[in-house]
Length: 157
Image (cartoon, rainbow, N blue to C red):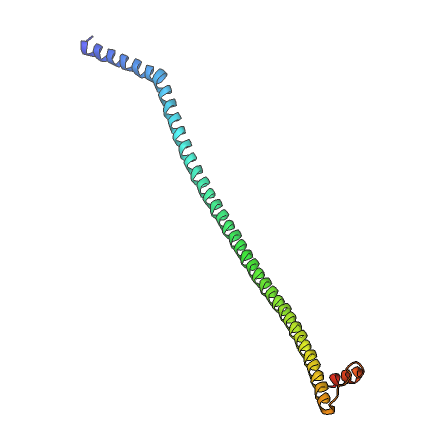
């Protein structure tokens, strides 16, 4: 045999053993590592997609809660305005009632003062009438004896 054929056959045999050894012992773990890596990448991408969906859902939920909170805040503000208006109206009504009461009290005081003034005026007029009659008659009129006449005169005035 020619040394080149032997060398070639030896190299072919060695290469075949190398291929067999690679296919038998190196290739399966390497393929398993590649498949595991592909699976991890696929799981990572799926997790990223789920995270994006969860984030979108969470954002929608946050927007919905904010909308509810704004609605509740507006309702509370409206209720506060309504209550404030009720308080103002109640205060106005109380003030009007108090003013009416004060006016009625002042009217009664004025009426009482007017009645007192009229009564004092009647007494003074009756005293003047008696005094005038005394001067006309030049004698003293007995006030107790003529009390009924004086009271009648005072009532007419």
